[in-house]
Image 1 (tube, rainbow, N blue to C red):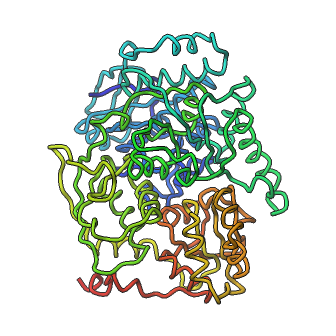
Image 2 (image 1 turned 180 degrees about the vertical axis):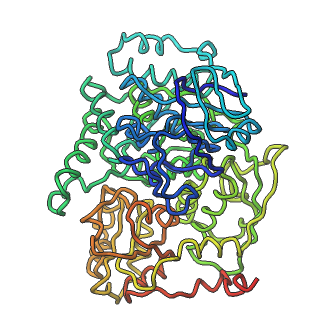
Length: 564
């Protein structure tokens, strides 16, 4: 079906790509330039062009980036997708509600999309799309199919205040766009929009805070962009530190808990199997659905607050039982030997070959896997796939039969070797080692302390661990934090690598190493630095020596791969 998701007008050059793009970490919010160093559109300016791609991928914060681009005049003239897409669509929808102007969003069927991508220019005018060889009438989603409860209608009509009214208007429109039959109650919310990725995110939060908005359900907060209590002492410029801190404060003022972690599944409030929640932050959504068996759509930033203010979410996507089944079986040729680098490499590759559907991973049930391995896998998967969950046969709780139409693909060790090379284009000399994307767990802190026992960081290499407040407190109580600091590492709460900035990120560092597949993907675009990737043990070796081996892990057997 061809449909006008958000109506509007545009006439511009078509910029088409067959690979999804995360606007956060992939697009500069001030200029509209693609900064994802691994994306085919790297270096392109999106402003004023009709961007056509299958769907978005990656971070939930993409909605806030698009909102900023619309506000500063650097946004695409229109967005054209061929699959369901919610993150960028929500950004365009919020712009329409908050500022009164937006950009059109269109969804085409696969065949029409392929034809559209071959066109040089196109025009969109409400319900019509014109391009070379195409003249389409676009259907609009109907609000009639969304059945609102009496309480929903009271909020929508403003009987419970202006803030719930504004939030419910956005929720209702999103429910219409997503084809949801009704809204449902949620037990808890995790806010991702507290990261200061653009001024638009601050304006949005303060828009609701100024109306006296208060959350209605328990609400945790993602990592923010500064160490909230110490950024003044760390040399962070006021021009960045103040708005980043104000953004966090706005959510706390509205009743959110200052948990400041991108790993809410490490908190005491971890949801139970089958519990209905509403989380943003891509890695957390995937972990909650996949590993915990809780239920949440991959909610975009900005919508997360609307849900928290009403306690209601559109009933669509993986909230529905039938939508949680795998539509692709990924058969993995597991190596005989491996280390903890295996899991982020695997997650990254699975996302590449399953960018638009939930996969079922087979062939690895016999491997030893813990919660930190699954955390790393889910985070890396979320950088390359738009899917809100995955299954692992024999490991995750809902790994049952795939759908009847599910296809099959295979991942070999050679495939993982290819991605290892992709992540290791940086130099042999390392200035910085980055741990904690997502936030380190207490178990990972202990593992790192054990590996550092009797060793010290090289005097010219910075080692930094980002972790949640609760984890840092526990690590201090048992002495693990002091052991790490005595070995030369710095521990930072509140912020995460994907939101860190100079000078907390050492300005003099020219090359970094990380054990995170997620950060290995985003770091070149976000930091402008060259990157190396490896296991925690390999990162410790680089931290202590200042050098990283050019040889890959022996279990990848890259030598034979290069010869083939």
